[in-house]
Image 1 (cartoon, helix red, strand yellow):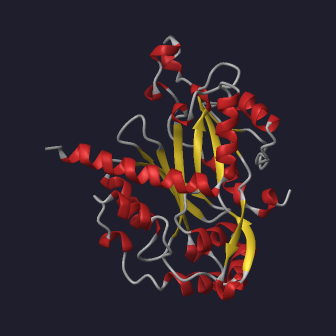
Image 2 (cartoon, helix red, strand yellow):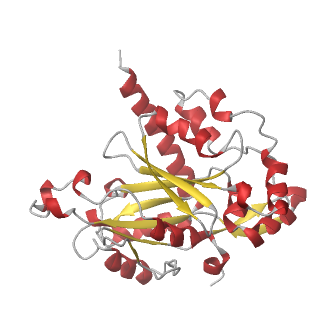
Image 3 (tube, one colour):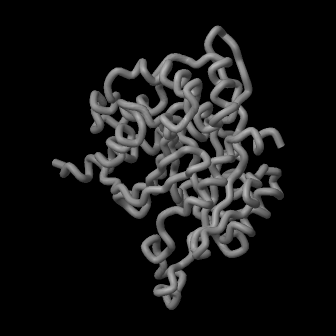
Length: 304
């Protein structure tokens, strides 16, 4: 008989596999990048990629938001870590460390709905008020397939184009969530584990541009933490043909791919390359970097 912790990890594998499968179907850049990495012999197959982290966006309203969403991953052994505040974008966020080194970190952000204009709040609540109780409380978290399905199902009715565009004018984040809900916002390739010539964000960006991948330029193509330990870049979100209410369609931002380089911490610089693991590198996130990476789904990037 398996112990509870190993059962939870098996369930987590089902959830993560489901998220990545549907995300890859929705974001053609994922296949383009991985196929090119194999072709250039950077990796042998997709399993050689370390997924640094995955990210989700939520609405800060009763019954939903981070307090609801986090119950899923806390159940599987993730631990809540640092809080980040994004004043200009009216967001809070937290990151969660995984139960195993092989699992991705998780970054969950939440829109501070009460900080928006009365009109934007009215639009958002006209949808989110349909959720009368915390949906995670009625979810069987030990059923990985049920959790996978939940993360890809509507929580409220399909929005209208007019409501989407109203939100877009004030908060592009709000517009993204009202349509995309819990869809995986991005996954992240750990470039520091790649072979020499590709194992820095600067080098990997050059490779990406050589295969015609469009990069996020907000704050520059390379975003670096003040301590120099976390370096990131991202693609511009894929545009999707979205089906809105009343059979209307509109091309809107979907999801994107991120790239992270975590430097070895100073106290471990004497270790040889084969001794270094995740615990020896800069952990956590950086608000200034994340602030610009959020804009991968913004029209300032997608319309370039």
